[in-house]
Image (cartoon, rainbow, N blue to C red; front, top):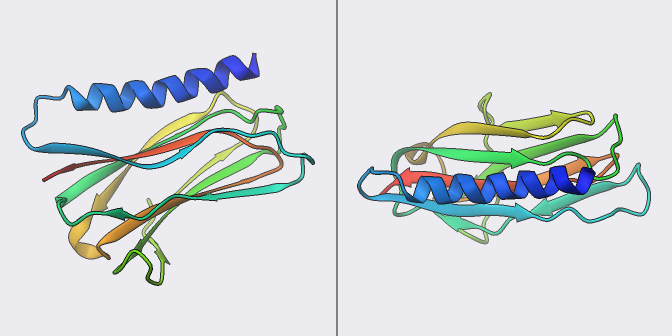
Length: 151
């Protein structure tokens, strides 16, 4: 059952990306920021951190949306916490700073079916590059972050 829920979460992430690709808005782009497949952890109290690659936002204009999708914990722990944090930097190998506005972090807690959240993002207010960092405690889960923006 848990694998079905995880597969459904990953499928939803792919479907969201595919649906976004069919939008009628001119000059839209959709960039994968983070894609995490859940992997079993040795100890249910372990911490798992996955850092996405730097994404260049030079072609992004104005405001965009980060779509964050998290799956359910694979071991079903009720004390699971999954956090996706968005970071930005002036250069792809530069110093990364966490986006500190109230929508910069998404948290998923407990043994539930997962969550999908949209975060607004202003491209002119930060560095040229962004990335996502996914941290879990007490279990592991899948996650996907997609950037939707205008060129």
